[in-house]
Image (cartoon, rainbow, N blue to C red; front, side):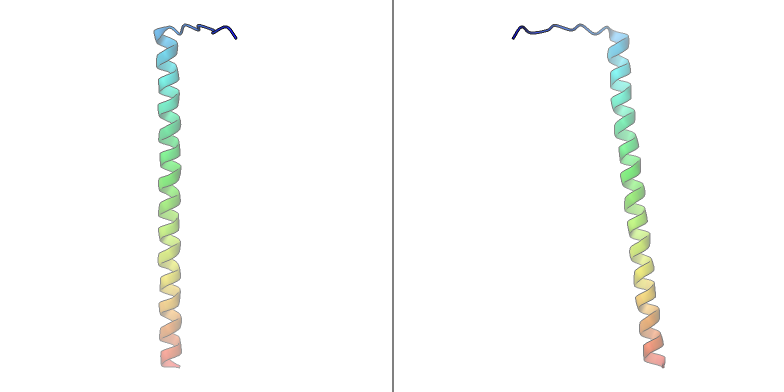
Length: 59
């Protein structure tokens, strides 16, 4: 199969790199938000367990 040689000018190359960078950054932001949400859920569950344990101990 013949090889296709596609030339990309500098502006297009910069646009592609910018797009890839923005996509990576957006994915990083989503991942960080998910980590924060998971951490908050974990802390909330721990607080609920602690509260129930105190209720059971006092009752």
